[in-house]
Image (cartoon, rainbow, N blue to C red; front, side, top):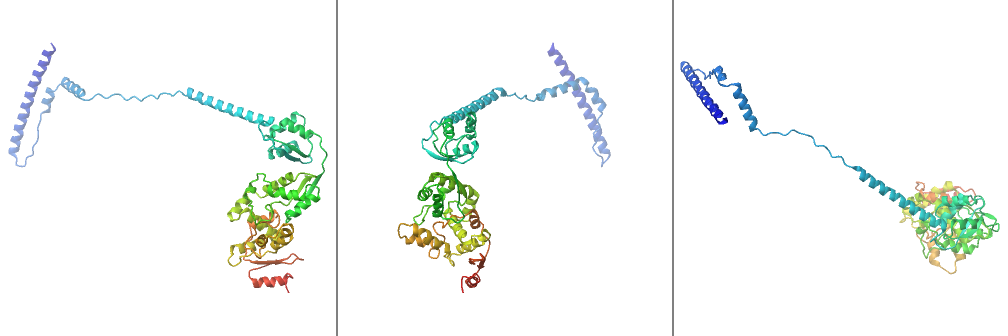
Length: 434
């Protein structure tokens, strides 16, 4: 049945096409006739569109449209993809678990470390002599113990002291302790009534020599002079500056220059070890990292800095003149070809007044190395223990053109010169030459 219908449609289409061909042929003939009538005639396609419309029904257009739609590929409708939601619950739980475990581990380790220190487990059995100052608070005592590596946790020590009712009841003076003692044992030791020791205040002025400092300590009843010199020059306490100090055969005392001038409080019959350590601790506190950095920028070693500062200390005396005096020696060091020798009287004095009287044998090489009228450049060691003003004067000297200076010993007036001729005139003004 469908085949018959298709055949009828095909017959109808053939008839329509024949009729269209006939109309086109008639139209062409008419155009040819019109063209022959005019030489300049233009071709005009006169089509009777009404007749074409009669042969194209709505049904045919629908069929054609349907045929075109069948030929075009079918397009899929665009649909945005839905993002899959990640499940963070498992990941977040894992992170939280790891965090909790890490915190727990840290807390456990902390408890173990603190507990071992409180109980004194596994620490060194070495006995250390500790000096507790008169009127020291529990906080200050705890810090002293930590500095001496007896304890690690000052806040825990203070808490234990408070629980034992030891606040304000710990006695001053020298006491022997070790880091393998428990906090309770240390506190009990500090609570013991010891023989009351009298505190002694000792002042080391700027420019003092190590020999003079040792004699002051002995005269004050603090410790033996010889023992102090021995310990101060040989014992190392772990301060950073100690690693920078050189041990040269030409140096008389290795640590001359490092006995920082200040007022200290010791006890009678205190050990030379605790005295030496306290003095070196003061030097480490005053000559800080910034000063050492400046020293390196200027190209000095620590021994050179202290040797230079000791010369300035002895030559100038007055802090107001130190930077100018330092500039004279700085200019000489920078022009060593013209001024190879510093020519400082203080270095010759050190040889005659300190080295020779305390030297076991004749060491001319050492004498010449210290004497800046003989040796070239700075001496191998300091000639005294300079104060902070002299050290800073070397680190930040005045900007001058001076190569000479002198001073009036009575008036303390200083005279500076650029040339030797000017210097000779200044010597007369200072009363040092006729």
